Each structure stands twice: as C-alpha cells, then as structure tokens.
Length: 449
Image (cartoon, rainbow, N blue to C red):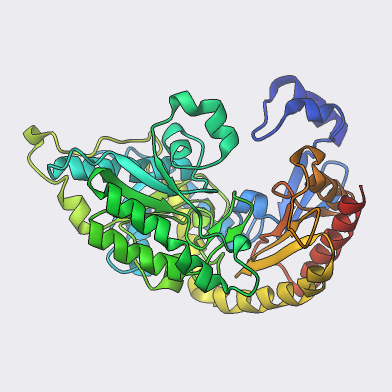
C-alpha cells in the first residue's frame, strides 16, 4: 500500500469533515499509516510533526504506551455496557476523579459522546432545570460574538460563526449575542485586562434586561479557539460569575478545547478563581484516543430533577455509548499521567520556549499579533499592520502555510489567516524549534504569495 492507492480508495467512498472535497483535485490528501509521540507517518514513509494535536485532542502523543496498556487491560474485562440502570468500575472511578480535580461545587457527572453533545446536554439541562423550578419563561441563552460550541443544532445556535448561521439559520433557536471581550480589538496602550473589563458592560446590560427569559450564559473560558484563537483576560469570567449569580442565570463553561492544561492550568476557569454551573469537557479527556464527553454540574441542579417518577421531572437525554468503558479507561490513564508527571510544570517551560522563539514574529509587517495562553500560541497575519486590516479570506493565505508545513514535515492547519500551535505535551525543545521555524518560513511564503 502507498499513499496514492489509499487516497484513490478514500475519494471513492468518503466525504471528509470541514472540507470542500473539490479541493482534493489539486490538494493532496495525506493518508496516515501510524503515529508515535508527536509524529504521524504516511504510507510513503513521510513524517509530520502534529503541531495541532489532531484537532486539539491529543495530549500525550500518539500511541502513548501508558494509555495503550490501560486500554488493553480494559479490553479483557469490559468493552461497553448500557449505563441506564447499570454501572461499571471505570465510569465510577472517572467520575470520582473528575469531581476531585474540577472547580469546587461540581459534584455530578453526566456523560455523552463528543463535545457538541456535551453542549447540548448543558443547554437542555439548564432549560429543564428552570422548567422544573417553575420558571418556564426562561428559554433563551446568551453567547459571545466570535464563539463556537460545536455543530449539532443546539450547539450551532449558541455559536456565532456567521457562515453556519447564514446557512442553517432557519433551523436554529434564537439566542442573544453580546460583543466578545477578545483583546485583539483593544485600543493602543490598553491592557487586555482593562479591555476585557470594559467589554463586560454589554454583557451586564444584556443580563439586566433579559435575565427573566435567560437560562444561561455560555462561554469558552479565556480562548475562543475556533474563533481564530482570540483570547481575553480572566477578569471577564470573574465579573460574569458575579453577574450570573446576581441575576439568577446559569453559567456554562465550554472547556472542551481549553481544558486539561491547554491554557496553563488544568482548567481555564481556575485562572479566574470561579466555578461554573455546568462544565463541558471532551477532546483531551481521553488523551485523544476515543470520543467521550462529560458535563459536570452542581448538586442543586441534580436535585431539581430528583423526584417521584410520576412527576415526570427526570432529565431527558441519552446516548447509546454513554460512559463507554474503554473511553473512561483511556481518560483515567490520561489523568494518571497528569497526576504522576507534573505535566503543568513541564508545560510552563515548553510554553516559555514557544514564546521566546516567536518573539521575532512580532516585528514582521504582516503579523498583527502574537498571542499566547499557556500551550496555545497564535500568530495573526494581516494585510496592514497599522490598521490590522485582514487579508481577504478568498486569498486563503493560511493554506500556503499548511502546504509548506506538510512539505517540511509539520502539520500546521491555520484558522483562516491565523497560524497557531497547540502541540501534544510530549513535544521536546528540538521539535518546538522545528515547528516554529517551519511556521516562520511558511508565513514568509504566505505573505509573499
């Protein structure tokens, strides 16, 4: 088997996500044969450093020996069992561990299959909570501009990607949107903290005006990942928590992309010292091995559904693979690595090296900003530095970086004109240097195109 043979078979039967398939008439697809550590290898023997953790899921490298061993042991015991009326050791232990390590007060776990499904669970649970408490007028959600929470219909509705809303708008529920505290738009000389605090005012006004009809506010703490890796200050989360309490509105923290160490702390909410009413986790939860998601919530929310069967107050949501034993075991092995290896301390050194190596990028006339939060670093390309005016999206400048990266053994997949790094936590200094150098050369090619 070689690359060309597998690609031909693929194109005959597969429809790929987030892809205009006609591009593959001229843009080669990369068939992967195996993975090890930060590397992916194709059928022709070419290797690619996975600088984006395969869509942000992989934490500790491909084919991690410790996670592999945990899965082998689970395979010999139980692969899956219905979680309605049944339970198993892996899901109980994982739930106990998650309650211990997440922000205080989150003491109940509800499992789903993927990040979008976790968001659906949180939205429905918040709505249903208020209904059970006799406040059926609460039916709406407040979200931030530039947000992304997944691609099922509920998750799309609370997102703010215009392409999706323009296409699927007739299918989506109506939501309230307020400006993002995204610090890219701060005034010259204004600190990120000051800007984020200033941008809280539209949220406060929305809550003041609409609290009676609002179930919850949903945000991606600190980094709007799919929204071009735009970042904001923790002060916004502190103000939001206080306001949600004051106006009796739930706070949903979508940490699907930013959880498990990506922002420098185990969970991004820790940097604001807050605990949400619902915490959505997925992606890195299993170390990038298997689809699994969880929503953690408070005992007070759980209690609103706990009643006699005849009252019909039970939460109405289920997935066939809820609490899958293999996924839970991979998640437990992932948490073991965090516990045993002082991962966050090692990541601080990796993040510092990434920052040092990309410091010269700031001086390039077509780099509008270099921003970083922990192990997430983004370089935004602009047509004009002074005005920060963007390149037209039709020019697909980021695609030049992507193709240059593949030609030089690094998987970079820019978000439009934003080149970013979100590598696995097993990347070493030499690999970081290679990743940054290839990105730099790719950027030079992209801006000259």
